[in-house]
Length: 95
Image (tube, rainbow, N blue to C red):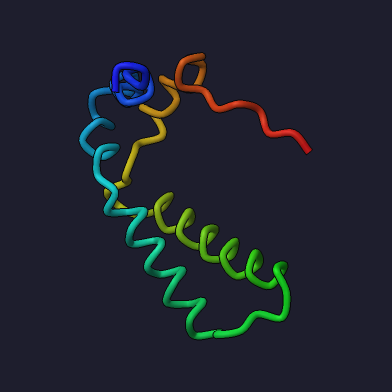
């Protein structure tokens, strides 16, 4: 635990408004349940690309719902505050 202290407490670098939401896994559990439900309906996929397309479409749909819902999970204004923080920033994605 001592070696992982920085990782365990990383959420403390986020704005105060986000902390209560970051410690809860309810939204991601709900999303995983929806992905499981939809993939079980299909049953057998012809190839890996079909799985990626389905889950990608579900993730895009969920992102759209989170972006427009009345009580947003995290407000864009508070995310903007941490956008340039090197401790919180994500590594660049390479092709």
